[in-house]
Structures are given as structure tokens and as C-alpha cells.
Image 1 (cartoon, helix red, strand yellow):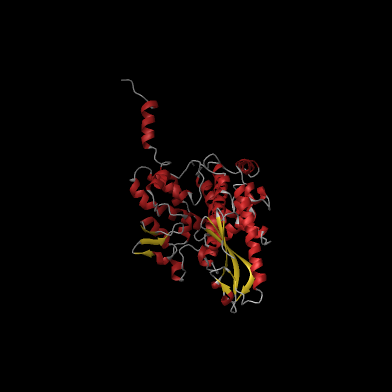
Image 2 (cartoon, helix red, strand yellow):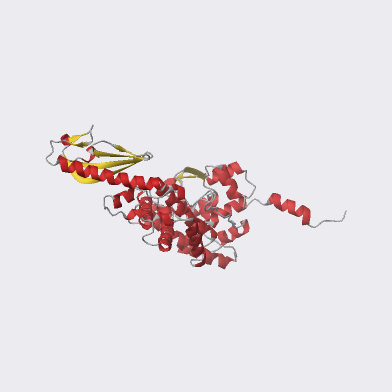
Length: 415
């Protein structure tokens, strides 16, 4: 018996020494395709001394050597036939399909549904809870549209166009939300190609396929007068409404810090009148001055510090299960709660713009406008690339265009 080599793949029987159990090692078939490897167990174990590694066969010292070698050869022949058929059709060599067709092993991950659910599980295991949370709804819509048993061959340019139509008509999603769903589908397809589940020649994105373009969004922040309205309104202390306003202002005072980072602020993060913390989104270390206005709000929570509470805001101090996933869920719930109260508060003080926790970040960008050099804004926003800062800030820099417009259509005095 020898290693079988075909045009695109190699097939070789092996024993898995790393799987040694009770003195026995499993016999497997190793398939290699374009440097991608897959080991499929035959379900038989032997002693390592009964394996001829040079000839790739069971030695005669094993009482069932003839039978086992015939089983190995039979599987190699079936895999060889499958690969030749795929090559003839210029189709992908699918490891999962080999397991199902050759070895009669059920592999739900061969379907779009199974693979997409595995993708969600991988995100969760990797502790990417925010990405996992947003991906769940996207994956559920994908599964509902394509069905429980759809293969990756069902993902075509035409089907994606129909999927976009369903997202618009049935779910009434915005263009940006639709793009997010397509990005999730593209990510799953890219992973499936790497894992040998999808033919890269039938990839439906890019080139002559679906081009995903992120639509420009209009960022609207509060102006200084509107910020002052929120600062000056009288609110009963230690109510949810009071915490919501304070969280918004702290986000603004800390150069548009994300609300998730504001909720995570610990008393131990305050050192020498500076806030020093690790940003939750990209794990960057950030250090920012605590201004007098921020200091005033923080001082109002000093009673919590005296009680040995870990966090400044109360949300996470009430958390009994202190895991990253529990923290993520609590922050998500708190953000929704704060947004509800900020909407009511905006109506009370006469602010007609939408006010949410994230608008605090936009407000800092709006008020800074073109007053602060872009390089300094990059530091304040903690962006890795200045291009990100430029793209973010361009919604708030209007002076040059305003002056140019005024020159043409402004009030012109007779000369």
C-alpha cells in the first residue's frame, strides 16, 4: 500500500500518535488539498508497533492486518474517485462532503445553517461578545431566507439580490443595516472557502459579483448650547434619569468616550486627576485629563467609593456574575435604559435632535469641528489611523464650505 497522489490532493493513511489511549492509536486518512489538511478517523485502533510507517499499512503482526488494510485501501479508492469527479467538474474538494459521502458521517456544518451557527459559536468562544450579539440577528435572517438545508452553492449573486430585497421590504432595514447583513454573509463565505466548503470560483462578492459599499452616514451632534441645557437641568439625584444624563456628559467630557467604556470606569482608573483605562473595543490604553466638569460629576458618586464599590456608575456594581459576557449583557441593557431616559430628557429641555449615549461622541466631534488640529483629534479619539479620524470628523467640519457658499450666495452689498 502506498500514498495515493492525484492532481490537486494527496491521500495517505496514518496513525495519530497524539491520540494514544490505553496503548492504542487510531488509524486515519489524511487528505491534503492545496496545503489544507484534513484527518478522518476510520474508527479502528491498533498498537503503534503494528503499523508500518514506511509502507503506510498495518503489519502482519496484527491478527486482522489483511482486513484492516483492505478497509484502508477501499476508503482511499472512494476518496480518489470523489476527488477525480470534483476535478472533472472544476468544483471544490469539500472535506465535509467527503466525510458525508465516503464515510457516511453526518456533518451539519456542511450546510449554510450549520456552518453559520458554528461561526456564532466561534465568536462566543473567542469572547467577541459584541460582535456575537450583533451577528445573531443577522445569521438568523440568513438561515430563515436560505432555509435549514441550503448548501453554499445556494449563495449566488441572484439569491443575494433577493435577500437584500427581503431585508428592505420585510424587515424595513436601513441601508447601513442591510450592508451589515451582507458583510456578515461575506465573512461566512470567506471562512467557508478557507475551510473547503465553498468553491472560490463561485464566490459571489467582489469583481463581477456583489460589491458592498458602506453608505455615508450623516452624523448629527449637539451644539454647545444644547449641551448646556443638559448640564443645567435639575434632576433628582441617584435616579436612573440622573445617571443617564451623567453618563452622557462624562462621555462628552472624556472626548467622546464610548458609553461602554464610561460604564466600565473604575475608581482605580482615576490616577493623578487623569482617567487611565483600557478601551473595550480595541484594548488600547488611554489616558485623558479629568476636567473640572468631569470632576464635579465624579465627586457626586464619592459615596459609592466610600462603600468600596468598584465602578463609578452603579450598573456593574450590581453584577453578581462577573464574567465578560455578563458584563457585556449588562452594559447593553444599561445603554438601552439610558437611551430611553435621554430621549425623554431631550424632550423636556426642548432639544429636537436625537439624543442617545452615542450622540455624546458625535457632540464632541460637532463642537470641536475644525477648532482642533486633526492630529490632536486622532489622539483624543484614540484612532489608530488618521484616515479614520478624517472620515469621522468630516461630517462636523463645515467652516470652509460655509465661507465658500457665503461668498457666492450671501448678502452682497452694492459696491
